[in-house]
Amino acid sequence: MIRFSLILLFVSLLSSFSQAQSTVVEISTNVGSMKFRLYDDTPKHKNAFIELARQGYYNETLFYRVIQDFLIQGGSKSSRNAPPGKRIGYGDPDKTVDDEILSKYFHKKGALCAPRQPDEVNPFKQSDISQFFIVKGSVITEGALDTMELAVNRPIRNKIIQKYMTPEVREELKQLKEEKKVSEFRELADQVKAQIETEYALDPDVLTFSEAQRKAYTTVGGYPELDGKYTIFGECIAGFDVIDKIAALKTDSNNRPYTDVVIKVNILDE
Image (cartoon, rainbow, N blue to C red; front, side, top):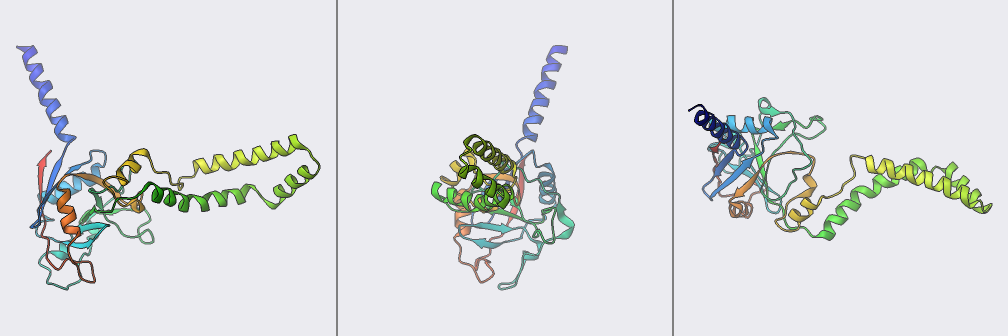
């Protein structure tokens, strides 16, 4: 009897743990429904989003900012019952959350993300969870990803090279070469090269797309320019076609669809 009770307790705990790890929400609209799995390792965003969803905070708001090959954004309370042509999308300063930007999550198609104010006024990258955006993006070639890396990394490397390859070092290398002091030349050159490569390898701003990023961006697509700048707290698991439909809607000069896309958020699993 005791053994049976322990088994039941174990099954119950296992079930609770499994549910806690797989919270699924449904974002339904008059265009169709999408399902998203919320990440357990972004708990501040996950919990805040669930709390607001339970309160009905996002219900009857609009996807008010829609840009093909970029994103669809909604949830702002200023969009609720907003008349056509009205400028909407203001955030709520009372609904900010500390950033949970994790490098393993990136802006592939279907990424569920929290917007935020720019760095100039928000240096700590706090999110505005009163809204959310979903990445649409586009499929990107391997060559384009290589070009992005090069555009970011070349200035970083050049700056480091200038730091160690000073005019004095260049002059010393030149003299050693003229004097045919091969071993001394190589020793100094190797020392400078090692300094450059070490600092370059440790620079946090160096851009290197992972294998997972390259696979996603060259197949389902996304928007890599946003990586590392916003908190991603979930991903689409059903309804990618709905993302496409919303992103393809005709919009006004403020990127608001002429046809209102009304939102309702439901918590399916916890």
